Image 1 (spheres, helix red, strand yellow):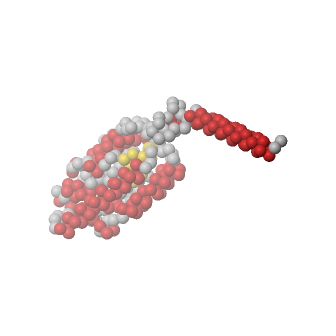
Image 2 (cartoon, one colour):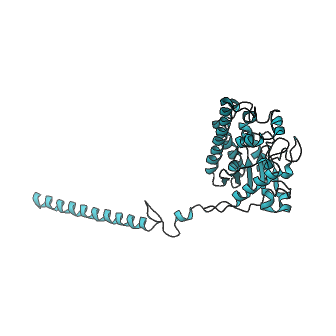
Image 3 (cartoon, helix red, strand yellow):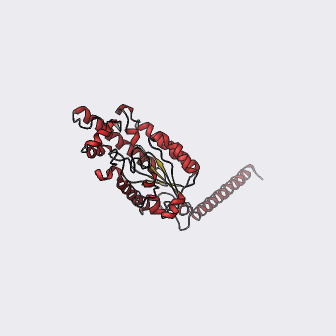
Amino acid sequence: MGLGTERGTRRVRRRRSRTALVVRTAAALTAAVVGVTGCDAVGGDSPAPSGSASKRTEAAPVWDTSPESVAAVGDSITRGFDACTVLSDCPEVSWATGSSTKVDSLAVRLLGRAEAAEHSWNYAVTGARMADLTGQMTRAAARKPELVAVMVGANDACRATTSAMTSVADFRAQFREAMGALREKLPKAQVYVASIPDLKRLWSQGRTNPLGKQVWKLGICPSMLGDADALDAAATLRRNTVRDRVADYNEVLREVCAKDRRCRTDDGAVHAFRFGTDQLSRWDWFHPSVDGQARLAEIAYRAVTAKRP
């Protein structure tokens, strides 16, 4: 065979080899495309096929409007302080877990009176601030409640001076820590968070009572209620500073709760409630009366049982 013929033969073989490679590559690509389109892969705005993995991982509703046990945490409001007798807790009228027929607490409304007596617990502490909530959450978690009711924050604003109020950053960090402590123990427990009452309205309502103003002088919420009759610029600024801090705290409660699928707030209902003197303790004109506790229970029950998307 001559050199020219041999070269020609090699060129033919190379062309055939390249043609076979192209065919095999095309076949492999075709198989890959067919394989992908036959799976559950979904991209862009394409709808997921029925029964796909995307469908299976969609979040189902997680809020149960009928929990079977309730634990309460918070401060003196949840302990029913000054609602029954002077300078004393009265947990039986607590909006959250009380047994009084005059209140019909959240626990009673959800569980019924007999069940509430066995399956609700009050771990709130008079005088507590947000920094104390982690310990209360930990103690409450030991009961394994299906719902934890929270009302705390008024004492963070009710300080000797406005400069002594808990900073918003600390308030946020402490609430996150408390929620984290609960989630570590009870990842599926539901949490209801009540907003902080309008402390400036407390001042405007209570200052109409001479006895109330005398009691306030003993040191009840000085940052807001001190010098109750003073209307000068300094007093107005002081009260507005407290009012604004409470608004900031309530926003923290809303934001932190919104990041937890099993947490809901009252959407500011407690803060917006236009209470009058009938809803205030006749001993200190600051804490809720029995009627005030009943109103808080109504607000909580509506929030917990609300049907939300």
